[in-house]
Image (tube, rainbow, N blue to C red):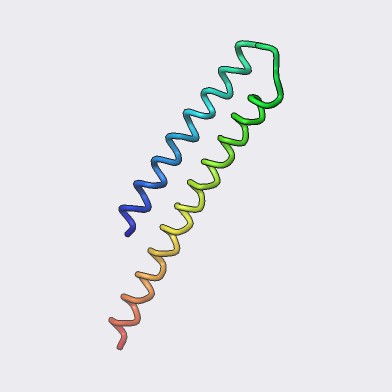
Length: 76
């Protein structure tokens, strides 16, 4: 389960980085800043960054539950 979450988090992170590069590239080209693509890239970066954070939170939560369960079994 944790390996799967790490895989999903890494995919989301890679997509967020690629989106961020695309966003910075559109800023550096100084094209006419049409608001739709500008905010589209920004929202894409924020969305995939948020999904990455959710996956990392789930990984942390799963590890805590596993540690608590192991401690409980060892003490019983």
